[in-house]
Length: 167
Image (cartoon, rainbow, N blue to C red; front, side, top):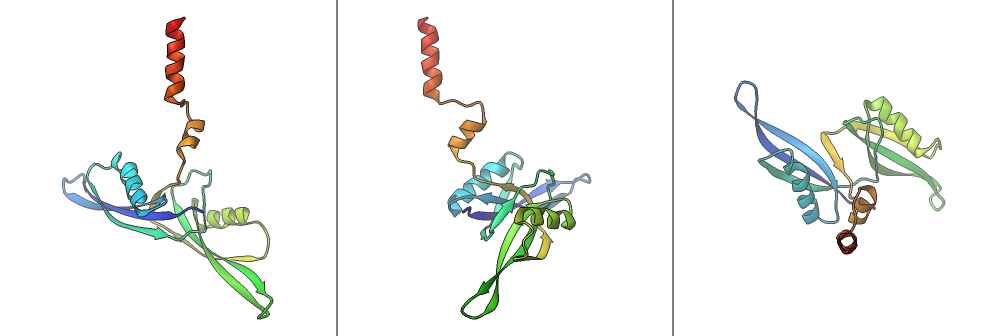
C-alpha cells in the first residue's frame, strides 16, 4: 500500500505590475519516509520553481488514488463509506475510506468513482470536495523506469561498444 505525503510550498512571483506576490502550492508524493518525500518534493518542484520553501509535509491517509485519462488537473477528495453487516451486534457497520481522483467536476468524479468501485450497493459516496493539489506523483521503481524508456544497463552498452571496436 502506498504512503502518500502532502507537501506544501511557498514562493514569491512577480506579477505584471512588478509587485511580488506570494504563491502557495500543494503536491502529493508517494514515498516510504518523510525524508524521501522531502527529497522527491525538491526534485519535482525545483525544475519549475527556482526559489521556494517547503512549508509543510504531512502524511495523507488515502485508501486509493485513481488517475483518470480525462487529463483533468483538478483533484477531488471523496469520502466513501463501505457498509458491512456485523454478525455479533446484528448491526450495519460503516467504514470510511478517503480516495483521490482527478476529474473535470463533481459529477464526473461521482461517475468515475462509481465505475471504479462497481455497481454494488455495499458503499456510499458521502463527500466529494475539490482539493488544492496541483500534481500527484506516484512512486515508480527504477527497474520499472528501465522497462518504460529506451534505457539499458551501462554494462550492456559498454560490452556492445567493445564488440564493435574489436570487429
